[in-house]
Amino acid sequence: MRIDSLLVKNFKGFGVREFFFHPEFNLIVGMNGTGKTSVLDAVSVAVGSWFLGVRGADTRHIRPGEVLLRHFEHEEMDEEGHRHCTMQWDRVYPCEVFAQGHVQEQSLSWSRSLNAPGGRTTYGSAAGIKELAAEADEAIRKGQDILLPLISYYGTGRLWQEPREAFTVSDPMKVANKEEQSRLAGYWNSVDPRLSVSQLTRWIARQSWISYQQQNRISPVFSAVKEALVSCVEDARNLDFDATLGEVVVGFPGGTQPFSNLSDGQRCMLAMVGDIAHKAAKLNPQLGSRVLRETPGVVLIDELDLHLHPRWQRRVIEDLRRTFPKIQFICTTHSPFLIQSLRSGEELLMLDGQPTAALGNLSLEEIARGIQQVANPQVSHRYEEMKGVARNYLETLEEAAKAPKEALEDFRVKLAEPLAPYADNPAFQAFLEMKRAAKLGE
Image (cartoon, rainbow, N blue to C red; front, top):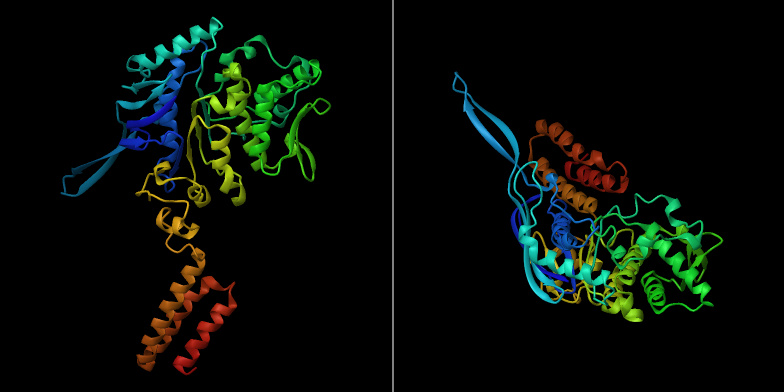
């Protein structure tokens, strides 16, 4: 599965907008409020249409709050001829999401819409993707080795809702019910932007217990997942389930740490990569050790750089590409390090500007200035502000030197005012005051 293009109408902050996606990696950038997360939400509606044909799966509908809210102004005249304006807010229908892409190796177009308040999201124009999903569902229930696409969405609050207790398993011998052993369990929570660490922990605990029962022979699928987890977490050396703690533990050069003790960045990346990997393992166990390399799908990640140190940000995209080469990633970011690590400008989706062809050979300053619209990235905003104050101060000082003596007191007040906010920088104030004393003969 992959999404080639998406057209939205009256969806969240977009009136009409079309987006085109790279088949491998996409990075959406833009100022706050331009709609980066809204694009991910629209894509989740599109890919979530697959679940219309999967029995027991939660599909993704257009929510009432996602319909464009537009304000209208009305003018009226009172009896005295004065104008009065009133403002009205209304939802604009229909709210529509149109998608084009490839599903089960077939080129396909489909759409979903919400046409009126209190209505339901339509699925009549998504019959094609629903039918393909239903065929896959039927094949799974007959035990056929059909290849299933992976679908997953990770929002900015992906770990916030998880209590620490979710990281532990009290009894690894009782970690899964029969429903969790179904291949279709790989679709649980797929379009929920929250991440379930408890599901990943239970799966690792169960795989570890199975390996123990088989004289420590690790299955090719479990081995592939463990390798992926270790390779995507900076400085990690190994990963295991500790039955004494009832928790996943990760080995680092400085020692072994339980999952609950890891930093937010480590936990966030480990949980996300682990969730993708174990879902792939559930969906396509017939692929064995090739499961991560050959599972196709679409993964959405809001703020990929969340909690990551800049050094880690520089490698995260290539880590994901290497680990999941057949998955199409659609992510958002504010990080120039991530932008710099893209392979071409075609992978950059700018919501408020035009992308450039080459990104890897651009400096961070060039990316900040040309793509992220930061006027002067070499210095802080405060430093730039102080330069402006100093420039205006010296210009005013020149005017004061030419003014008559009776006007000097007013100029002194005018010159003192802009220095007041910089009381924390006495050197800056002293320099300008010395200039004033020399110029005005004080």
